[in-house]
Image 1 (tube, rainbow, N blue to C red):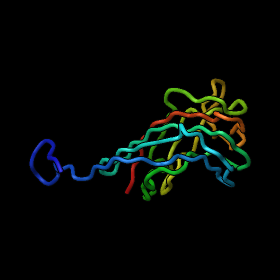
Image 2: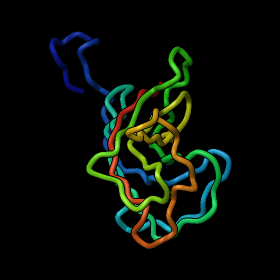
Image 3: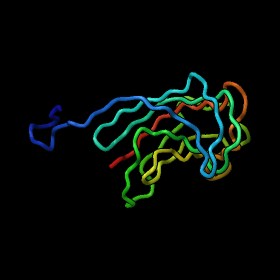
Length: 154
């Protein structure tokens, strides 16, 4: 580890990790069947109890699924304490493209003791709402989203 701001035990940074993970689209009540494009990839940096994520996801085929659309496969499960319901968040960075319907992903939040992001949308004339699996388009190079975020773990 490295000592930051002093040489005491509390100043030692000894929990740092870098890695990759495989993002997936999930449904809250039924998972869609998906063929992912080769551009789908993600990485993370874990510093103590904070995990920073970034990546992109794109599909070449998508069908079925039901319920809210989730970004699954997070590298660690979020914090299990229930002091607050939301343990982290994600925003769409760069852009998103080729989703069906009016509700498109703009970000999301991570709840307690889960390894997925609940994908949300902010439409100009309405409040935030969850994106549904029906927003997934079934065409090559669709459902493309670049994202980044952070969350707390145990």
